[in-house]
Length: 129
Image (cartoon, rainbow, N blue to C red; front, side, top):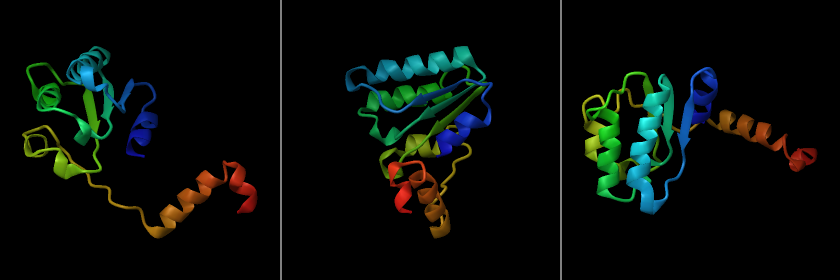
């Protein structure tokens, strides 16, 4: 939902969404994605489930993309995880890598109820509500 909100908030700026990377090309793909985002800057770049990066080299390339020698001006990087304990301290505590960090938590019961109704009203199940 955060990525969807970020994608629609400023439609005039590019939004690159990375959901899954091929395991055999992960490291090169991360580097190419950051290079493309820099060319498109100002740009929003979203990585889904960063805890699923498969190897140490991929994580190093990601960290380098966040604060390496290349310029990150004009990039808004959104990275999420359902398992923050698997991400590693280098990303979570590194200077300027994760500023600011948000923990949205679970929606309240009435918010979940409202969301479910909205989704179900768009489906064939809506006649049973």
